[in-house]
Length: 348
Image (cartoon, rainbow, N blue to C red):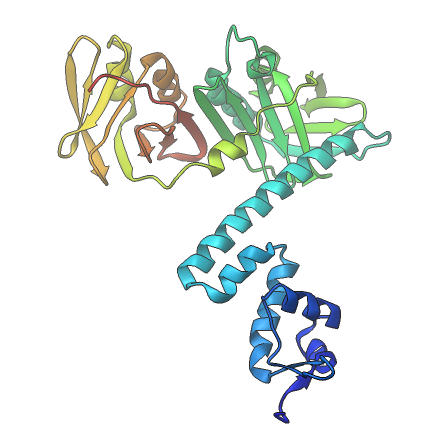
């Protein structure tokens, strides 16, 4: 037998695995030994297997399932990258779900630590104004008539959706303390509080076992919340493919064209112009900056129009991944506000 071969115990110490784990990986065919003594059944490993064993240990420590470990160890670089990217996304989704669930339990415990985020009053008021158009009206799902106010140690996020639009505005607090909180607030109540906060230089959003409130200017206002579960908007954002087509055009001009057009309206690119065609065949053409494949998509003006109205600045950016996927509507002047708008089907 080669003198360089290592016993299972020595190999286990070198690579940071237990002998029982090495036996298990041998049985699974992931890491067979270099030699098995025919008489004793003892397993021996070569120094050349150290790298594979260490990589195996790291993958398992990261929670990668054994079938996928085999792809990383023995597949191509492209296959390994695809497997690890998918696993990372699943891990992030699971961590976010766990964080949300644990946060809800913690908030239900007596003596819960206070969560606080401080933002500008005008900034908070602007955020409410931007997401409010995406709140549903007259739906059988009361939670869709609310806005999600999400706090953590990095951001304050306001989220609203009516299933045809999803609006997300992110604020950076100047002070953040006490962990995470998810508040579901009726849009009318939040709009009223936004008006109150508008003239204030600073507004504290506070959450504790007694409820939620806004503080600013030496005054305090209760932030009434609902005991409903808001849809997981992160699943929608994470499932969006990379955009294939990007279009930048004048926001006000496009909004005006939609206001005057019977829907649905078709948006298509023609060279470096955007052509808007309404249901009756009337068309307008507007200057645009277009990259990627030609664009052809259709919208209900009543859905796309408010998304444009809530934007900031002269330009609007549309990002399109596929004809049947939500279109991302962004403002070039405010990257912290994003709206997703569902297209509609039309006859070609």
